[in-house]
Image 1 (spheres, rainbow, N blue to C red):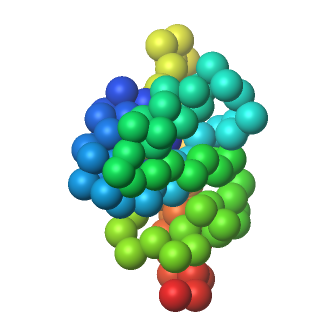
Image 2: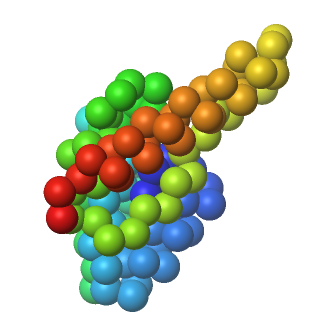
Length: 111
């Protein structure tokens, strides 16, 4: 689950954990308790579990570790900013590049 700490993604994580699945949850900084605590708590409620990974959608290879062993990928990470100067540069380009980086990681994953 990319962007796992987002609103929609958090609900998906919750449901997947309730179904007993292990969720590889990516966030920009896995060491940020503020961004990950609710995900960790969801995993503790089980019966599934949550494993949190750091991933920068704009960095090639950033999703590689999180993808290993996954059969399904939910891609919910996307730029979210309020002060948009150039919509294409600020929203479209990062969303497209992030998706391309994720798909490269998926295609390169050894299962």
